[in-house]
Length: 403
Image (tube, rainbow, N blue to C red; front, side):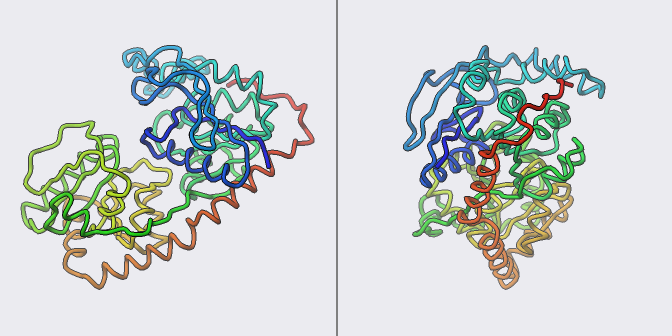
């Protein structure tokens, strides 16, 4: 088996976030297959400040060796906003990009020093998320063995030339969805780049019990569920507005929000904020939902969507989200809504038509079973690792200059 490194800006069992969970799940799966895994990460717990919280140095996370490096300084939001101005104006230079990446964080030079000094000791290096400095500056240091998992979605920072350069240099790219790959091709002229559309494995744990969730949280009505970071950037303002408009006409359902709130929430008799819940509780909530509402238009995969579909629960998603609309189109297991009236009509259909709801649920389970088993996902990662472990014949090629 191979000696591999995983580079992730944050890492650990207590770190929330889709990219971080994916990095940890993949690390654990590859370790179970016999690979020797070292995780290179920072001391930060949150992506807003990148402040050092966890101790620097080496530790263990089960079978994983984890090496944490300090961040040069916490993010200064005023300096970051100033650095973003050239991008907002639509005209920027390579120096502007370097400043944006540095100010956005995490600026952890010791991660890059480790790759310079010890990168040859890893047969492959897997970088999770293209957005941050450790990936765009790290890939050129180990380009001949680099695997990038971009987790790309439409946002201003995704337009940086440095991100396209990292994609072109990587030996392999592992995409989450066809829509993510199409976005990269549109933004960075990387059509034909090596790599497979992969995603993540999804398994519903045995013993999932919707009634247990209803009893635990006092849920007496049908409910739509949203789980994750409750934030404007995730579309939660629109979700709440759409739901409250519907509830004025039809108050049969609740909106259940599970996760930490990063925005003010209204006091409303039909909106229930449960806070952060345990993973087992989340599975119970998913299994008991009438539908899972996923309001974000900026996704590269949406694990919440796949977990809902695996439970046989339809998803309710907004138009203008290519990834979520792609899941609905390929699975026939959800509904796409436009404005508040569309949202209300979709919610009412799911409440009133049990047969349609069951058919959508069965379609979702078939979709996940066909595309998102760990057996398939692990095989695709193994294929990428095998390619990265074979040194290219052009190993002495000149790395393109920084744009």
